[in-house]
Structure formats: C-alpha cells, structure tokens
Length: 558
Image (cartoon, rainbow, N blue to C red):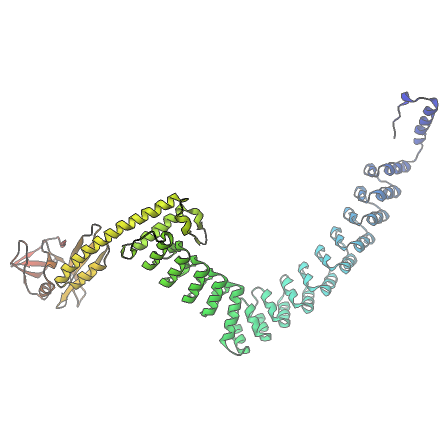
C-alpha cells in the first residue's frame, strides 16, 4: 500500500482524490491485491502464501524461475514455466508426467533434473537423444534395450545391465565388450567367437575363452597376456605348426606390454630385444639376456647395467661411454672400463697410465661417488647418474675441480707407490726364484698390499711344506705360520722354526729335509751344522745336530 504525505497537498481536490484512492483500496479483494503486487514486482510472489493460480501464472509469465518459490504449483503453472524457460524443470520438485514429457521433448538432457522419472519419460528422453542414458540411474530393461539397439557402446553407462542386454550389445557390436562391467562367461564367449581380437579387452580370460579365440583366429594369441600351454599349443597347430608364428605373437605381446616378457619362458633374442626396446628396464625380468639384448638395453638407458649380472667388458664400456657415472652400478669394472670412465671426465688432462695402479676400481668408484654427491644437479634420481663431462670441469663447479685435481694427485702418488711396490716384489720374487721357489716367486708378483695367502712351498715323499705369505702396507713380504701336511691323510701340523730362516735354503735342500734327510745350515749362528725335521708332541720341529728345538714361535720374517 502506498504512503501519502497529506501535509504537502496543495488543494482540497487533490486531498479528496488521494483519500478516495486509499479508501477504495480497503475494499479490494485479497486476490486482486496479490495480483497487483506481482504485476508490479513479480518477485513479490515470494512473500505470498498460497497464491491463486491466476497470481502464480502472472508471476511465472514475467519470470519462469520464480516457480521455485511457489509451493505445490498446479500443472498449468508448471507447463507455463517450462514453456517460457524449459530449464526451470530443475526447480520443480514433483513435476507431472505431462510436464516431464513436455520438458524432455524440448531438451532430453533435462532428465538429469527429474527425480525417479517413469519408463515413459525415460524412453522419450532416449528416443530424442540416446546419450541421455548417462543421466538415468536405474533404467528399466526395456529402456536398456532401446539404448543398446541405437548404440551398443553406451552399455558403459548401464552398470547393472542384464545378461540379455549384454548379449544384445555384443551381437550389435562385439567391441562393446570393452564397455561392459563384469561380463559373464557367456558374454565373453560370444564376443571372442564373433571377433577374436576382442580378447584383448578381457582381464585374465579363462582357458575356455582363450581357446575359443585362437580356434577362431590363431593370431588372437598376440592379444592374450597370459596364454596357457594348451592355448599356445593350439595356436601352433592351427597356424602352420611353426614356432616362427609364436615368436611373432610374443614380440607383438611384449611390444604392447614389455612386462609380458616375464611370462615367456626362454624367450628368443628377437623377443628379448623387442621387450628392452620398448622398455629397457625389462632387462631385469629376463633370466639370461643375450649380449645383443644387453647392448640394446644399455643404448636405450645406460643405467640398466645395474640389473645385468657380471656384464662383459664390452657391455661395461658401452654403458660408461654413454654415461660415465654408471660405473657405480658395475660391481667389478675392468681396468679398461675404469680408464674409459676417467677419460670421460678428464678428457686429455689426466695423462697417467692407470692400468698398473693398484685398487684402480676402488679409486675410480670413490671419485664418481664424490662427484655425484657434490653435483646433485647432475644426478637423475631413480634412473641413472648423468655426470656431464663439460660441466664437471667447468669453473662453475669449484668443488668438483678440487675433487678432480685431488684425485689426479692421488693417482700420481699411487702410481709411484705401485712402481716402488713392483720393484720390491720383483726383488723378492727374484730372490726366491733363484732358490727354486717358483710358487713363492709367482705368488709375490700377483699379490696386493695387505693381502695374505696360503701357499704350498714345496713337497717330497708325501709331505708338503705350506705357509702363509703376505705383503703388508709397508710393502714388506713375510712368510709365516709354517706347517707340514701329510698328503695321504690331509693332516696338517705346525712346524716350529725359532730363528731358523728355512726359505733361505734352496728348494732342493728343503725337499731333502721333507724326505727325512739333514742339510747343512748356510748362514747364521748355526752355520755349518746339520739341519733336519723331527716329530714332536706339538707337531714338527727343527733339529740342529742332535738337539730338537721346541720353541713356540713358528714364524720367520723374510
């Protein structure tokens, strides 16, 4: 109702007119007042309780969305709303079937806004636009069949399709099998019988399904992830009975999914190559990869050398040429491999003959370990170390330069130490070689500092003289822990020498002693006396003249 300011009215005539308007408004009906309110402002319908149909229609005519503010609108009002704007169906909580069908006739996708539409409404939506099945949560079988008849692949939007509907979809389009949730055995069988290649869409098909596919077309074997022995044999017999075709199937299978290589027993080289070319990491799934396959994998990804057991020098070199950091994945790199890795980072600046350096493997691996730690940006985790040779010797990497320089100096020192050791070893080897101890001589030349080995010095008359030979960190050669071994029984007993330097005597003299004879002492305080072996309660001892020495010390340092 309007408010009038009587004080500002200029004439009695204006006062009478306004007063008359106010008086007359009191005599208007409620419906007429509500009608005037929504005619002036349609949103006033929100404030009106139980408006008449006439008032509802007046508001809806102006703004169809206002139906959401009308409680229990009549069918005429609903129809008026969707006639003006069909999308307003989403604001109607309980539309009649006629209203639903009217909306669907305009836009079938609006069925998604209709709660529990009946079968007639569903069919109307499907007839207008079959893709609206995706908006229908519980379609009846009749509705499902109507959808499948139009487009079998839309069965993907029918999660609980009946077997009858599934079979109809397969008959219509066998490729629909890939869109069916949990197909029955009968449905799978129908699909692979009509189109064997469809087996590729079946997860873990049974042997019956596999056999049905390959019997229809042997080439379907290539789409079976895990064929049974019966299926493989059936495919062989049906397809010219040759292995050549099975190999082709296996190659295609691993090309599609390289992990299938693990399910092929004793795969041929072409099959192995196909797997690693598709994914080099599958080298770890092959029990005995050929060298050709190893090379193929390394060329794809050098870091896979970590999965190759006892790689040949050829394989090692292939890996470190591509990426020197992969030397960290090689358990026992050869000297040539170490040299290749070092040359990759030093280029022509190392200028050291590394081949004769002791512990070259350990030194090289230590360097690359340090490089990977100081250059985290050069490391590609989970895959391989990518040590960039150019960046490593760049002035931008001072810490790396220091590491490389320190390592180079270390190799120089090691080289000198190695050369000195070789001189010492040669000296001792010549000394023992001149006395006839070829075993000692050869062993010394092959030993490393800190290493100890048991060696048979010589033997005669069923007895052998054995001892432990070692080279300490100061490059001193020692022969300790002498024992006598009875070859017939294998019994080993200690030999107590005290101050006697047994190996200062020639090999022929020691052999005489093993035979039970005595020999003359060459030098020392007992020079000129006879020396022999004698049995003692503790094992064996040395006799000088007629007296047996029972000393506990059984070692003699050379």
